[in-house]
Length: 261
Image (cartoon, rainbow, N blue to C red):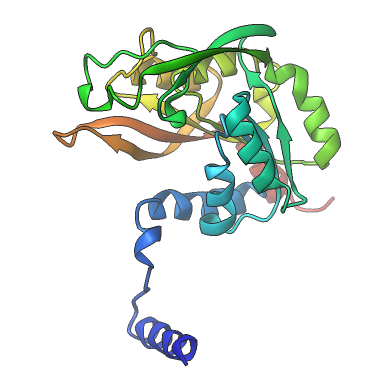
């Protein structure tokens, strides 16, 4: 009865030119809507989820974006990796890689923070955003394996047979290091998502101007900016920046315009 009533309310709302949205979807609705359009435009069939933590982004893709293609998640932190693998075990198109990505291959010390989402290769700095000090503090340091995306992309493509790749980066101030290790791969990435910093929460964290310059340098045009967090004064701490590979999109557009030969 409740489901029937809910469907009826949705139909009435749509007839009036409105859409009803559950409260839990509101925070990420703009990003989800943007990705739906972008994935359709680029026929994205594989998402590289770098800095997967416990699988929040993969769940977001399935539940809120409606994405049904391949996901390849990268997460080096053992405690998070166990939860991530358990979640992905129920999804045959979701593959897990227990390594970090960066500019050089090898091993590196990872700062495990009190709240795992803040875990980073960088050291926390709470001088600008003190409200995060309690959660963004080191409780342990673990040595983890680091690889370059250029090294692992072949394995990912072989496992998924993907054609159009979306690169999502959420490595807590380390995203540009991942990009440095992907110089040979970036030209084949259809679009990407990276966190850009407005108010630094780590030492030596690149600012938003550096991030934008790096994206432009590699031929990516920004398609959307979505606030991730704000401080007590409602200042944006970080944005999720979505950008499209301009050259690749032009080639695809030209191919579509030329039609069959």
